[in-house]
Image 1 (cartoon, helix red, strand yellow):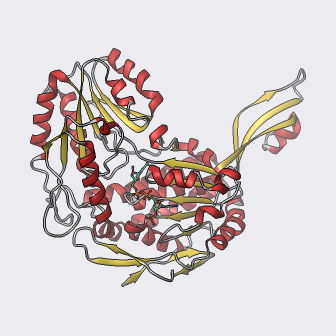
Image 2 (tube, rainbow, N blue to C red):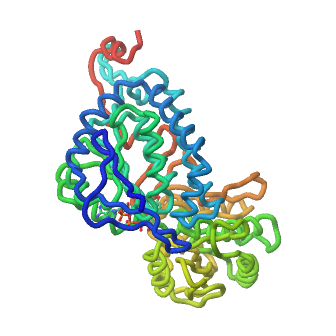
Image 3 (cartoon, helix red, strand yellow):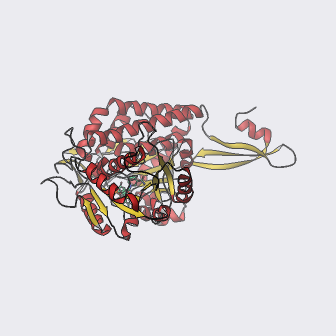
Length: 503
Ligand code: NAP
């Protein structure tokens, strides 16, 4: 069977000891094995810091951007085999796999473009210079420089290509070497991308390391110049944050965790209107795309009492024809969950949400594979504001007066959406919802090819307060801040101007 390997210290290294078997979640057939046992993580981090760091920092932003473009091109040239891998190892439909792989390409290209706008410099000038004294000679200027550590990227199972790219593009452009660790169960896509990068020498030596298998004691070797960007469950996020060395050395940590994203239908929206149809379409897309295993998927469908019966019936009608099955068939609209553990977790979560099932249920679908039907819940218990069910599950929650108060019970999220034509209502929702979110999606039927709230765009920030982990990634050049140290220069204006290349 295929043995996935780690790439550390400038070499491919196979793990020893008991390996985890990666399955095809449709057939349960074993596909590959992965183990990180025996990989010297401390040495891997040291090599990245001492070799990859200086090599990257010697490059200008434009040169780092050219490397990102080359990675995007390499992924593009291998797109078909990568989609096949996503279908086999992730249970993705072809459209789900494209969402992941094309999302990776688009994000790398977006940061390659950011790089060209940053040009020949190796660090960032942050804002305007400031006159600090009575005379213009006493001058201040903020700059941001790449940190001298390693950026450790720990990813979730649901987006092996995009998850890798959205973190790596930003850190590499900032000038930090990366050690990327995909979730083990779906690591094959990221592993293949890494093979392409290494085989084609697309980055300076050791600017990018790759770890397959468990994280083991990885986090315990991190220090003050390092950064951890983690995507996964809130529980693991807490473990990482509370590691003694992370606290002691103030290791910079970014957490992208759980989120109870809400879609709010305005009281002005009439059934059958374009706005209403858009709302239904976005809810159904988010429930079924990637079998609901999307951190940004709508979990809570917040609707006025007056149209609750109509929304319920219309969603049932739209969910009815969704074909759940083998994702390699073209008419399949929803594949299996990614793993046996995911299936068990979704079943337990649905139980916890309580209420009645307006559509679907937790029973077995087919005799093999980790399948479940879409599930629409009505009259859920309070757990709907507490427990993220990471699958094709959404709950209807009715409101009388103030939907924002209901949304806020989710205690912080990645994205929520508002569907309304009433400007006053939209303004009230933005004011009340913004403090609880990283992004607000204002649905409008006139936006052509609207991707809905579930798509993360590299130009906009991704992350959210509270339950969502308190992190922030992407957002165009804003994202670089995670990997850079802002420093205030204070001194003689001509000296500082010279440093900045201004004469
Ligand atoms: P998870 O169990 O927390 O695992 C996430 C990653 O952390 C995996 O790579 C995992 O490695 C690794 N990991 C596990 N224990 C670790 C430890 N003690 N130290 C360091 N790394 C450790 O989460 P998951 O079940 O894969 O992902 C589902 C969750 O991710 C959902 O709750 C979802 O909301 C969240 N998510 C959030 C976002 C976002 O952007 N906010 C995006 C996607 C998913 P192994 O695979 O080797 O165990």
